Length: 118
Image (cartoon, rainbow, N blue to C red):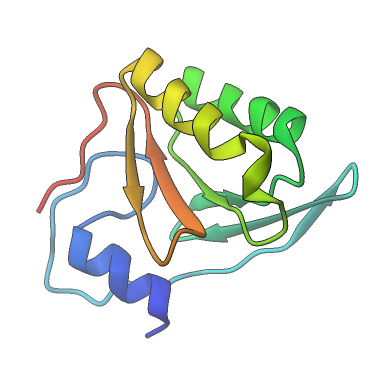
């Protein structure tokens, strides 16, 4: 089992919907897509986005407004340009929920009303 698959299994999260924890093994799937030069992976059906600047982050957060869970990876951007402040303000303003998945680089963003069942 991969690192992220273990985290999602521990959180009881699979895909974009509410799910019940089962005793079956959860495996992370990684799919690479190239749309307009953007790197997009998927972990257990949840898309992972890699913003390089604030404008890219804003476009990715549009999915949360459409009631879709996403994962944001900040490994390829400078976090000193206010991008983290914008993310936290967005989460607060839309009543979404953010879950830090590892050391300040990977965040699960859940839209309002979507929860992780334990």
